[in-house]
Image 1 (tube, one colour):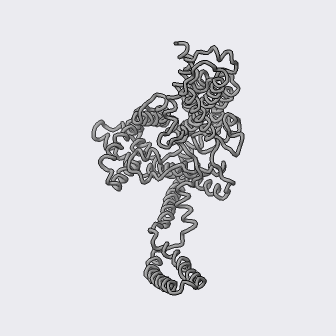
Image 2 (cartoon, helix red, strand yellow; image 1 turned 45 degrees about the vertical axis):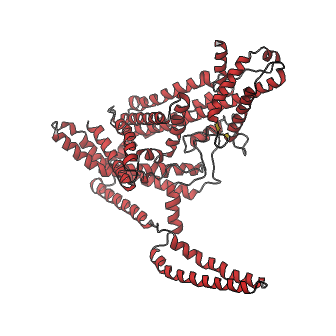
Image 3 (cartoon, one colour; image 1 turned 45 degrees about the horizontal axis):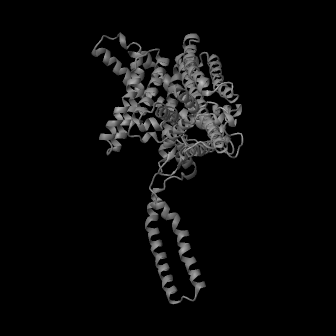
Length: 586
């Protein structure tokens, strides 16, 4: 019996190559116990593979869906500004309101008269048709535009958008002017520029080497495809070990060997996290499909051998049903992940250099065989985003130089003050002085990465799903913010952490959420170590405290949405400056 159990465990391991059962004599001598155990394992899988309400199988990869979408700012702000902005419109709406009401009443009276005439003379169909056209259709043509304009809510605040950017421009101009008065055009006197330009060539070469390193994941899948080894026995352990070495090695190289400045270190660390997530998603997506692919072929072989070889043995209908359910699900799962238009985008044909290379270029962290694509590159759009990237970087440099760097230097001397109230007041002065600059930097960082850079990359790669963020600025609770402000990472955590912990460790949803927050908090704390060379767990504690805060928000502020959003924005505004000041000072 122990031997049978070991064989069944092997059969259910993802990536395991199924033994050949084409030899009828071998199958005749096989114990029916193995088949029963295999069918039992399939029945357990069928419980979460089958949707009882819809009465059909469901894909386990439908947690993340890609579609043709514009980014929110492009769709509702920039697009609306370019296409619909015509200056003030509220006054014309108010003037049109009584006029359109009179027009509607007049046309309705005319239509009523037509109906009366129609009742008197039913034989004159042509005249009736003409009357219907003259009034009912013309009413729509004359009224629909104006009524739409009146009934739609007034939402055009485009002028404030232009005002905001004009304000930013004037602030930057003022900062540039102050810098010019002191230093002229000598950028070498800007400490921030010096930090960013220091060893830039070495940083670029390390970054390139880091990118090339992730092709190890592709190599592992190729070796699985060539049957050099199986994913379950060898491949997954290679990836586990390599992922740990990958993140640790490049932290050590940036800090211990190359002695990069903190700006270069945090850039390389964040990019290494992006590449690590891509590598992980590619590996474990294909590993899941390896399991489905092998299960499909093994179940088909069993069913065929049963129908051809078994004569007197009593194979229960339940076993036949389990095999059929397995074949149905596996076929549907593989088809749902295949691109019918391109025969090369079918598992396992997707394991090729071009497919992996394009995935590394796409602005997404979740791998799938194919993605929605646009037809062409809009070069004017690329130019707009490149200008935005350059402009935002310059803007951030100016804010950092004039509004943050002097206070960072001051924060390094907080511990020199006498312990007690004097030290606290000195730190408080630093914190308050840091807040405006960090508010601007955090907002500009979000805009630079999630709108300018990702949209530019998406356009260059014809990647059609531009949903890189949701309307996080309207959040009430921190769990909403965690989901919406960074959708690429959220999708990765949803599939490869949240759902993976549920399926692999059989955790409940609350525990899986806790594990997801815990992993995210650890990574953020590592980022603080890369920045400040300190392990203090300040950010870890603040981030984990978001869970009880979310519970309290939902319980006591659920009916006070505006207050909840105000508290949320208060936290967003003070946190960056608070984190920086306490990590530097203490």
